[in-house]
Amino acid sequence: MLTIGKLGEAAGVKVPTIRYYEQIGLLPEAERSAGNQRLYGRKAQERLAFIRHARDLGFTLEAIRDLLSLSDRPDQSCAAADAIAKAQLAEVESRLARLTALKTELERMVVQCAGGSIADCRVIEVLSDHSLCATDHRHPESEVQS
Amino acid sequence: MLTIGKLGEAAGVKVPTIRYYEQIGLLPEAERSAGNQRLYGRKAQERLAFIRHARDLGFTLEAIRDLLSLSDRPDQSCAAADAIAKAQLAEVESRLARLTALKTELERMVVQCAGGSIADCRVIEVLSDHSLCATDHRHPESEVQS
DNA sequence: CCTAATGTCTCTAGCAACTATAGCTTCAAG
DNA sequence: CTTGAAGCTATAGTTGCTAGAGACATTAGG
Ligand SMILES: [Zn+2]
Ligand SMILES: [Zn+2]
Ligand SMILES: [Zn+2]
Ligand SMILES: [Zn+2]
Image (cartoon, rainbow over all chains, first blue to last red):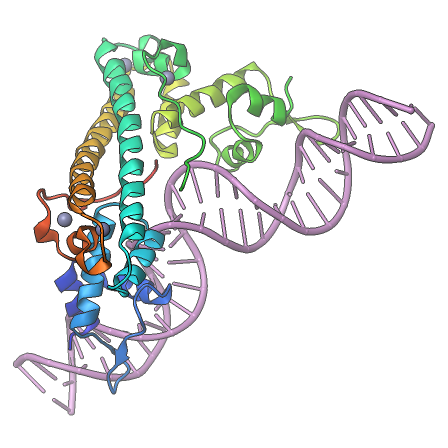
């Protein structure tokens, strides 16, 4: 049995984060020692590692909640899990597209500025006027979820 | 002079957002009409457009605050503004690198899953074990702000 | 001129996913 | 037995908004 500190160290998760996960019901309430301190076994360790890895891959806590409850029913079809992963992939691809456009514009701004005074700064100039941009990089209004 | 609604429409910014910007001091306190409603002139319009464009390019409100106060002193050197833009470019590049790695892993997961039961689901399997990943995609620091 | 429909006002609370602080109690090493 | 690290709870702060309540202002139609 691990204390919360050891568990956090093992999983690469900060202690308050573990308590937060318990509070929102992502981790079950931990066993307690005689002195009221949390104790964790191997199952909790695996669950936390799963959460950490999914977070590292950009899944939201809501998606992770669903993935965890799916993984608790091994006999069912994995279609729902695959759908969550595909949705996450789509989300990442759309952010990638947007960031690529931003990178283009930021590079242009930075390269075009010859230095000098603010009055002649290309950075300030472009920020003041989107028509000086090469691409349409605007923030998409809404995301669709299927 | 524009009302807050017209200004928001003109700049593509929602009304509560404008009030929020005023509240945090990013926009100066607006003039008021006889009936206590906010009124905006051309200068406020330009300032809001600047903010909106910079937000679209991913700058934080803190960075925008600095950029605005720089642009209010046209005689000074633009080095500080350029530095902010370069930092933002670096930030975007690092997020791009990370998202690219995530995309790789998510694609692998999704492609490798042959369907079937959760017990055999490659998505769940990979999420349970980072050593099944092809790249090191771990979270170096901050994320989010789509 | 009156009314109904918008628009605007202030204030508060909520979202994600933590992080930080304060003021305790418990544990382990020496 | 003492001390300092680690744990506990509870609350508030972070970023950049967004949503709601309940009251006042403005505008268009009849
Ligand atoms: Zn410059
Ligand atoms: Zn632009
Ligand atoms: Zn699957
Ligand atoms: Zn991995």
